[in-house]
Length: 458
Image: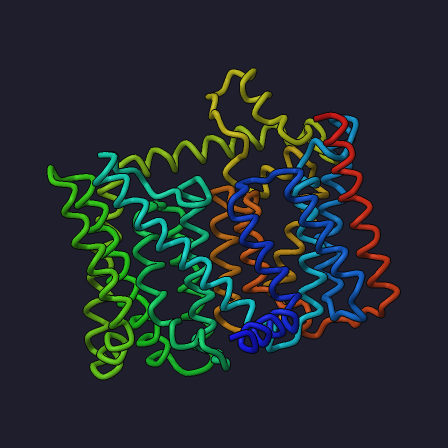
């Protein structure tokens, strides 16, 4: 027994970088849009780990664009508040050490990290389903699923990214005990996604699937790509449809305990999911018919949440309001967290939210056009790099979602994307030990400053 425990501990030591990054994701999932203390302590710990590394391979263009965005964010904070802590950089600065440490991972470690991240999103989904049933049956209240992230729309895109990352894991197999459990995670992710009723997340998922179709078309032909996507849509329709039934049983019936039955069905799907996939492969015509039914499932989501159309119109009005402030200070913006105050005082509709539901517009308004340009350049660079199909699809889903929502500002969501869809080591530049230590050292100083400033001002 003692020997077995020692071997497991030795295994964790061998993969300590993976463990550090995974625990970072686990922590940031709970803090929403950010907590200065948590983000700074995490960033500082990652920098300490990074200082012990001998080398890393990093896409310096992507890193430079991301660092440029952070520098402009700090400059905007200083111009508006007189310090660099009262802004987004104090929490989002953690992305830079995450990116650098990912450049230290081997291919095997990268695969393991992606699987751990997918497992965590599935655990989040499972907990969300149980939370919904508990709230419905015991408390008598059926709400859209917010989960650990505290917001249905944030939870939705979190699950979409996890689902697409799962597709990548299954198409890129690796050794390990996790492999046999991967198929069972898919229906759980899809069912929980349905409980969020997040139309923006469903549209982002559709964008990701469309990218998968285009990339599959390059590798095969139209027929092969068509049947591949039909297979994806068939599984998505069954998983999301079952989740929708769970929601309807809890929210639209006089006997909410009935929602326990769809929950048990989701558990059965997890057990027999591979057999369902084998059935779809054996009879290629079936996925086509089920995909058509998926349109009905999508319509069902819209019917269950009729306010979605009004919400979309409101977001367009929010974007228009934001655009009117870009000319106030094109270089540094009006300052972090200032748009809401301006919106409260202008004659337009008061939207009662901190972030414009279009990330590029929001960044341009509050941090300036240069910061928005750096962020856009980082997005384009990440898409242009040679990546696997599912990674491009995951990036596309995330970028699409952020044109109509605010997922970028949730530390757990952006961290999940970085850990599952970004591989800095691919065609990256090798950084020597001294250069790497200088970078980690500089980032550590910033995190320490943020902590000290918060401590004396808190």
